[in-house]
Length: 171
Ligand code: NI
Image (cartoon, rainbow, N blue to C red):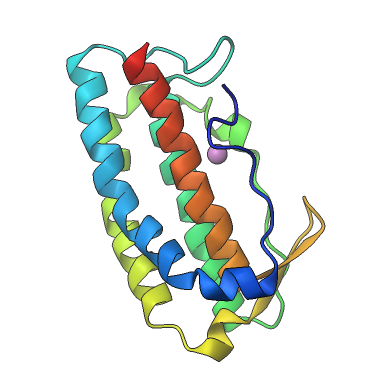
């Protein structure tokens, strides 16, 4: 239940380079997919249903996507403009428990995702080969990301949480 599409594994450079278009497409398409399922969850009154026992509610998942991908966007931009930056971690569990997550309507995060992903997918779609190969260090995992493996991670991350929302919808 926790990893409905399986955990993320860091692709090797050859695989990541071959799949750049897929990552751009997945990142570009996510907001519309989330908005569609969020609308269905709202109609069904399931926004406060967790996707698993003790897990986040659909509402928390939607707000988490906005929180996480705002960080992701900054990570991509820093990778493109700084020399091998160290990615700043954030406490995603605490972020999901802050008051805005219960007080703000999901539409606020759907709006964030729509604008953010349009910028993000446009940025990635126009990157040069040299830009795709720029690197960043992630202290949490100890991984060195390239821009394409970072995009791979977030391409997976969007679909991972979309699958959580689908679990709630089918419950
Ligand atoms: Ni997540």
